[in-house]
Length: 274
Image (spheres, rainbow, N blue to C red):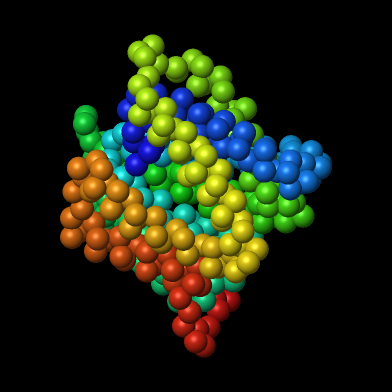
């Protein structure tokens, strides 16, 4: 919702850039107070690189998408991140999958196909590119998760979170300047991008990694399934968007498939694939 409000005035690239710049400042202050700056300094190259894949690229893609499709649909597509994460980890990291998880992958992609089948038009005025942008962003998140698993396991989570935003900021600062709007920006877009940076990015990262520490990554992953619920609610309440039964049904199939594919919903005794 905040991306939609900010993007309408700032444009796609400045919205994404301001988001990571503001988050970087907020996280740097916390990182310094936590005494973890040395961890960032030691591993900054790989953290910055992963930050481009995990933040810069997907934030730009989502900022583009919310300008062309409603926030509810964007959020449902965003909920496929664990789906792509499980698929990439299986192909690249050789994670073992049960047949139930494979069924989940199939269900998840069927849900996406049903949800976007009548919306992914590439004719003039169609929203096909916006749908592809969401899926590409979700793929980036999934790919970055495997990269982090392989290269950042020895890095403090707060250092990884902070460094990823700094890396994304460096990548987006020049495009932000070049694409800066010529028209004056009102108060509402500035407030939206500030909330987006501080709370939806900076504070969200802190809460996310705290949940990982206290309850484990599987439980932390469950928050992904709540994103469509709140995005649809906010879209209806504040942006006059419409939620259809078709969206709800396809979203349910996608989320169920994602839950199965990540192993969050288990089937006792399910055999592993050879």
